[in-house]
Image 1 (cartoon, helix red, strand yellow):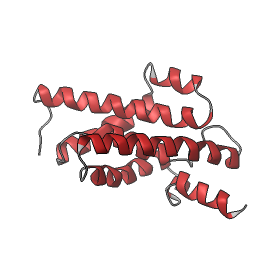
Image 2 (cartoon, helix red, strand yellow; image 1 turned 180 degrees about the vertical axis):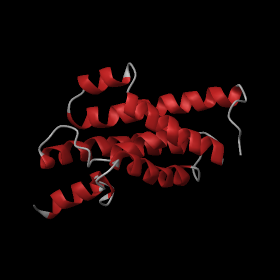
Image 3 (tube, helix red, strand yellow; image 1 turned 90 degrees about the vertical axis):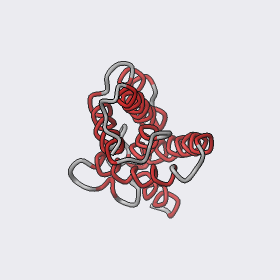
Image 4 (cartoon, one colour; image 1 turned 90 degrees about the horizontal axis):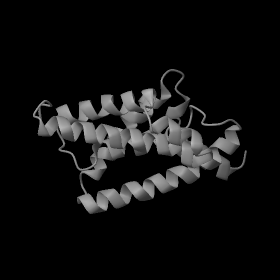
Length: 157
């Protein structure tokens, strides 16, 4: 494999996190918390722009990595989990309750894939399909967190 392919796989697996034998998506989501922390340093419009740019890069990288690994939506690709976590926590307060809830709600929606998440994932081949389900799972987690905060169900500690 050439250097370009190695760089693509390094990015897609987030430096090899995707090669962890058990639950690579969960470990990719943990890594996504670091990206979320970096987003808190930006204004909301800048953070949203950063997520759009990151997601666009993740689609391209996932498309290339899928071709290199020669199978659809390989579990080693975890850059999409990072994008999903970014969507799950963007614009929310930096508190342990919100972030722990965001992590678990994102994983719940990412694994369960309720409608329309699974529907869109199946209709979008390649890189877009790899990333879209995680962005939607992140958006669902974000909306759920916001609802719990409005209803004061989620402690902001």
